[in-house]
Length: 60
Image 1 (cartoon, rainbow, N blue to C red):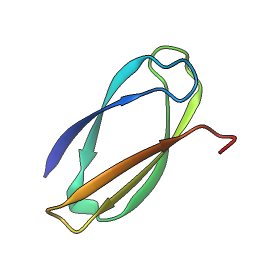
Image 2: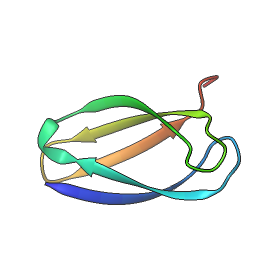
Image 3: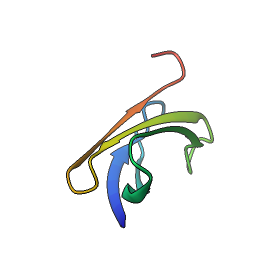
């Protein structure tokens, strides 16, 4: 189950879109911003149907 979620980079503020795989359950991972290339921590909470995504800079 793939979903997409728009987010703003916590560093440069540019909008981007994350592709989320809900079949993996709760996840925490790091991806670089597609604009400024700084590392963003993504925290995905899901029960397989409902989900939420939070993004953080490395200093948070």
